[in-house]
Image: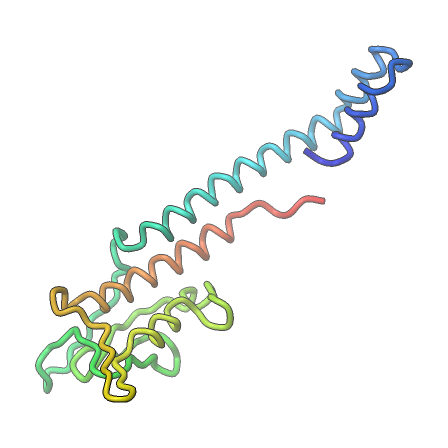
Length: 175
């Protein structure tokens, strides 16, 4: 509810010298009713979109991955494992997972959802790499689920696209 409606209502209830008809006129003016109705609609729209955003982000692991195209290099045995680091193409439309597999068809809108100064997909690419420091090897691949990182990439693309779509559907800010 806009501050002006709250102030008018509180002033009307504090001042016993204002007759009941005047109170009704202040509280029920057509402009205030329209504004309150618009604010209420906007509130519920934001609430619904917020719930959808929370659901997409909390349950990302249960989402179907975005249907990326799997391009196989027939000169190398197919593997879903990240061997060192995944690499985005210059146009950011494909992602080389390893020598045998490239994921293609990444929508440009994927990169509109940002986590600070980079997209969620770029964050995953940076974090999910095989490294070794002081003789300690860090390997994000899962022995029990060899397709985990490839599936995660598809899920992150799906979450990014859904986030961009939902945020774009938010009602405009009101004064």
